[in-house]
Length: 98
Image (tube, rainbow, N blue to C red; front, top):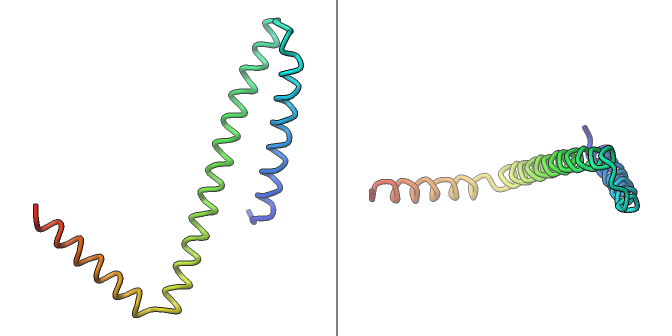
């Protein structure tokens, strides 16, 4: 799924959630059991949709970080090797102190 499609999906889902939330607030004075059931279902769906959108954002951020890291390592291979070696030495030193 490309980024433009995901951005449109996020925008559309946020718009729908906002409209339904607004409708439920306008119907707030109604206290029928059916309306309460609808509110509960929407809140569950809304939470689920927001969680999925957050997961999409995390996935996009991870892909972007991986892309930047890959570019950096390709442009600065010796610096990346040095940083990796220092990290390995530091971890080895800290592990041996136990």
